[in-house]
Length: 223
Image 1 (cartoon, rainbow, N blue to C red):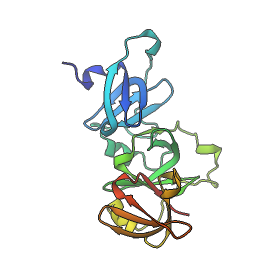
Image 2 (tube, rainbow, N blue to C red):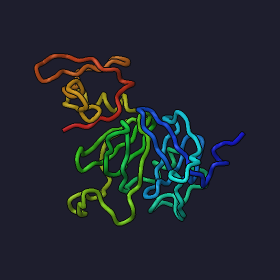
Image 3 (cartoon, rainbow, N blue to C red):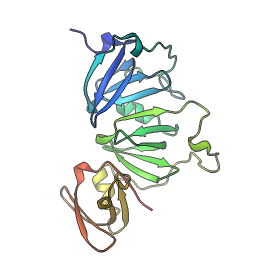
Image 4 (tube, rainbow, N blue to C red):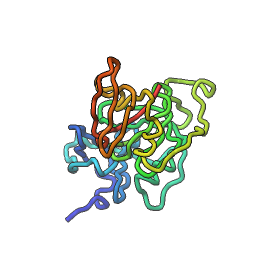
């Protein structure tokens, strides 16, 4: 029986949560991560979201490549893992996918127990659940998001007091306006009124409460 390590340098197709497909050459793998090259980018995929994978045998799907470095700006990792990759990517411009159909651009500033802190020129400071982070793509060296200059979007340490878990960090935002999951619907923004167990209560614009399941929160940002 073949395993992932037997498929290094093979072109594979993987099916992820949310009906997302990725096709690329398998460059490396670990217990919780796959590294693909799609002909343009290195894609670091969390295996947590992989439903299945298969080898692409058709000539049309084959991708030929020579990749010298696993991560631009990073030292190669002796044993690759998703957490190590996130740690090594701090301060490197990166494109990340959470929902699978909308990407976020910026850089990671901190990696906590179950979330990362991400700095985006669009959304500013964000908290992103590791459970929902599907994959990340490092930018090529010397490329910046939106062609922003150093002064327009500097890479600097963010002086935040951070809790180890996302749940505890959210409690610091009680009674503040927050936006969950990039405001994908009108029930995902409002004043964070309370948190009890798995239940989050938001007060919406017309003072109507809505109750959210904490375990389905993917991203958090705040104006």
